Amino acid sequence: MRRAAFAVAAGAMAVSLAACGSAKESGGSSKSSGSAKKGDAIKVGLLLPENQTARYEKFDKPLIEKKVKELTNGKGEVVYANAKQDASMQNQQVDTMVTNKVDVLIVDAVDAAAIKNSVQKAKDAGIPVVAYDRLAQGPIDAYTSFDNETVGKTQGEALLKALGSKAKSGKIVMMNGSSTDPNAAQFKKGAHEVLAGKVNVGKEYDTKEWKPENANSNMEGAISALGKKNIVGVYSANDGMAGGIITALKAAGIKVPVTGQDAELAGVQRIVTGDQYMSVYKPYAPEAAAAAEMAVDLAQGKALDAVAKDKVDSPTTKQVPSVLVPVTALTKDNIKDTVIKDGVYTISDICTSQYKAACDKIGLK
Image 1 (cartoon, rainbow, N blue to C red):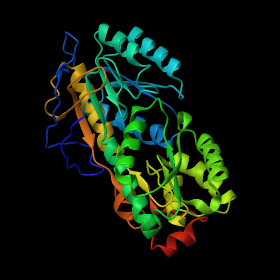
Image 2 (spheres, one colour):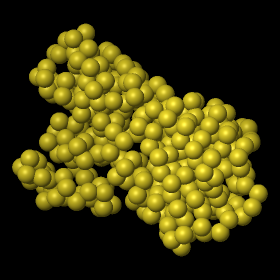
Image 3 (cartoon, one colour):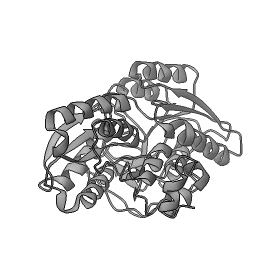
């Protein structure tokens, strides 16, 4: 897909994108499929994919709830369900939302393809659907996420910087995300574009369900296959998996750069200690704000032109009105300027007694 560049203030609750992307085919709509315009007393169905990754319960859910209330003068209601990484459960949750006649759905799909029929059911019932964070298949009305290929490129560039002259002195291990998540494929594509020809990939895995324990098992297998002296770095697609990877590395007595994503607290703390080299900071506030704004507009029968300045193609729907939010490489050098500045964490959150000495060492006081 072709995208334009964006400039969005990280952490801002309102998103304003100044460029418009393009696609060859059209078919998306910027208006709700519902026939009657609603007032502020709308019901927004929110379906998130799992609760193992800290972001969904701690950030996405409360941010979306807050923004919906703000946009509807306190009258809008968010009906929430979490699929706990079960695609069949999520399909049932969509059915329940349709039965309960929500006015709009925000769906972060467990499995982007498996959700397709459920999205169609919602559409047939006159309920518009906003795909959140992952580009769900089916007739979605809007989409918001981060530029996922850029995420992968950011991770790859950071790993190359950390490896320096040692980049081709051994093998790297690539620990990608779940094959059911379209974002994982885009992260992987972006990373490969940057790393191609500059590193030697010894082992590469698509990690089932993004689970840290699966990444840990994969990493143990990679160490056994490659030999601990031959591994110079690890591409990890997110922080949760990085935790499992680093546990395996430590058990084998290996210390190499490891990437991540999501700026989870545990990931930031590992960056402070030097166990993890970097994470990708994705400001959830503007993503959540965009999803809430598009959902409210769709429920109220309004056009999305004011908020959705880009168009994205899914495998099933073309020209989907979209908001794509930029990302930042988070290292020990910019913790203050990212997650602390944006109010995601405080220094006391990060620098608990276990991490105080490491925080002091890098000037995080």
